[in-house]
Length: 509
Image (cartoon, rainbow, N blue to C red; front, side, top):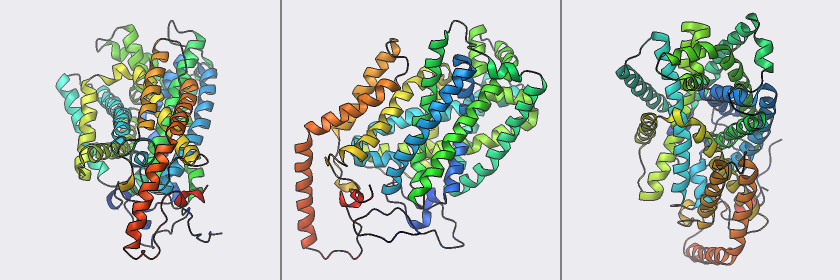
């Protein structure tokens, strides 16, 4: 039953576009404007984007890392934790961007960072998402190099540059086309991965593949489990923030439940396939990387972090074709998310609104720079610190929106972008302090799983700073409302104008 609109209530359902219209969300919905009805997408389209992103070589790599570090049984526990946390964070953060109709970087202007302060969030997002984009590019490139036997250095760099150009071109097709492509290639990828699982069973390796313990030399069970859980949690925060760029296109708020479930489920299933595929092709992959000059430990690490090579070993040319097509859907979505962050960075700092093609090119250029910096060699540290950043960001959004601007009534929700403060020092200080403290705690071994300290520390610090600053925040909003009232007296109210401030979201709670 469709709800009757109530004055002062944020809408939780929008009309579907007229029959025959094919909205292109990336092309028609501005990054800094609420999503128009014509750009809305059905929930299966958004779920297809998320399932396409989590069913990637990077996530297959994650499954291998978790299984090799934690062992199969404890790796399964890590996956269960990931599923629950991914669903909760994706739903709660997605609800915010749906109600605002804005992507996560821009929504973070409204709530935790402020206009110029959101540059901090964009830098975090560029570091994380463009880093994942670079990792995926290298993994795909290594699979192609292996399949064709190319070994020259110039071939390697020419291939990486060519792949990045493909991501740029694909990102210009728009969200609707990507959703359709994802729906097809997710099925194809899982078919090939299913074939690899069949080979594992046919070779009599299934029992060992599902029951082995820690396979990393010198790593104890507790240490390996802690590392596996921390790595898996990285997926939860990253998925929630990535999904927030696309949940804004949903037609109904209740669509966020199946969207969150599908994205979280596919993440876990991909991790499981990754564990099996890595185990199946480990010896051959390690031998291949040994011929490239790696020592034994380096070759083992490269084998775990390059599942594309294992898929080529298993399925040959068909496997390579599916990998290429599958990565097109994943890295195109990553390019869009990275371009969103680049656009917000330039706008927040310099007031410059980049054209969409320029933002996509810049995001992929940064990815190439990451590759030049040898990002795969730093992937462990990258993912570990990334979990602190993403979890802190998600918890900040949830705390500010649902608690500080909710029951505590410190600040308003649903503000126009031009009424947002320049820097919300409470949010910027919180993520900076929490990340620094927990980064040190993790690096020194004082905390094995940073989530257990990052989440409560983020919420507690932001609530405390907000309470201390409540007088200043409320005084500033009173002054702003007074100015808005004076302007309203001098001009007739627009018919049907959307409510602003707390009234726009209070009834939606």
